[in-house]
Figure 1: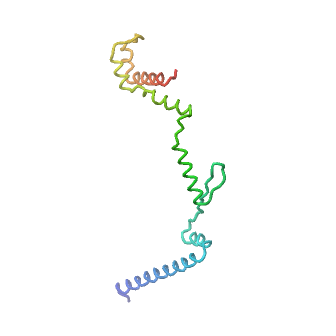
Figure 2: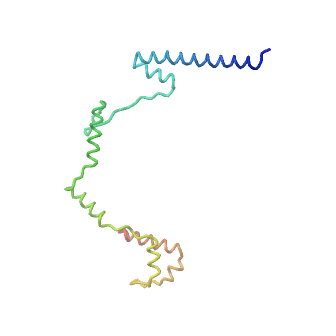
Length: 153
């Protein structure tokens, strides 16, 4: 009959032997990998089970494929420079910048609420109508003001 310590030592020996075998197996696989690049991917797939091909193909301005690392880097440089170039002579750009500078933000909801607390203006809509409508009326009026502000009817 085996004692608890005798069984434990056998289990420990089995675990140690299994780890040594695993290490030898992996070292043998890595030696094969060093010999041939073509076999590397197959061996990686065999070991990990989830290899996928890496695609480093980019296109230049004329849609020609670039595969060399230096060509790809050069294409990124040109692309980034084009993004940051300012064309101050382009009329569309000038118009867009002027429009953005001239525009005020649309009215806030709290501004509409403050305006409702003032006496009626030219439209002579009594404040009681808006008070009777409650929060839904304020939201409706605020939405209407925003549409008018944005140029919608």
